[in-house]
Length: 305
Image 1: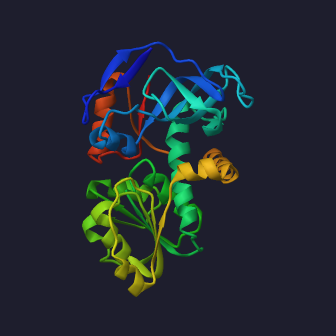
Image 2: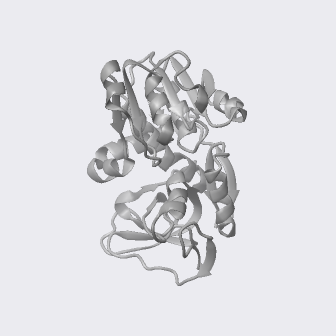
């Protein structure tokens, strides 16, 4: 089978031929039909001290199951997280991190909706939104952000502000349901918001905190890091909440499953619409990473083996 790999920090990415892996206990072997490309994986290629397997979101057909697997069998359509080599024709998924794909959805729908949607929905829940509150979503045109904008509106936000890196993304974000679109240099200069869902981090954290009303909440789910002055939180009685979907998946599987069902329900009703920026072949993985790294994507970037 084909697999994408790299040998040094920063790449380049290349295709290699390797044997098809075998699923171990509690694992499934899946023929990949769609693979989600995410900013954390792109950053690992450019920043990790040594090469790592390119994993992430996979959707496709189960071709074999390992010992002890009871929820799935060969021939079923699934999506899940691959912690090993996921940029490949075949990938191994852990049963606990795998979900069925409904008949009404394609593999591309699954990778565009589920993982990004779980992060968006989890971050929104962490903000403890009240009906009528104002929300600010950074990275509003990204794979997670464009779903967070829609979910904030679905959950009853009175005003939704989308923050983007490029004003050219404004029309796209407004079409998702945002009332206002601002660029990052305008953060903190408009009417304040009750909560922020931050996908960017870094230097954006300080103005994002400044954009909050007294008592406001910022949920940080970015891999971009950054620091916040405690005094900025103290004087405004503001809160910063860290969110990581992997901790929910491992520690609260019942919550993870509830969110998953909610996402598929909203999708089937047409209320939540994942957008795919582009589809790329495995040999074009570097090009797909370039789209994410440049922050030029409108929605999800997907690899198609």
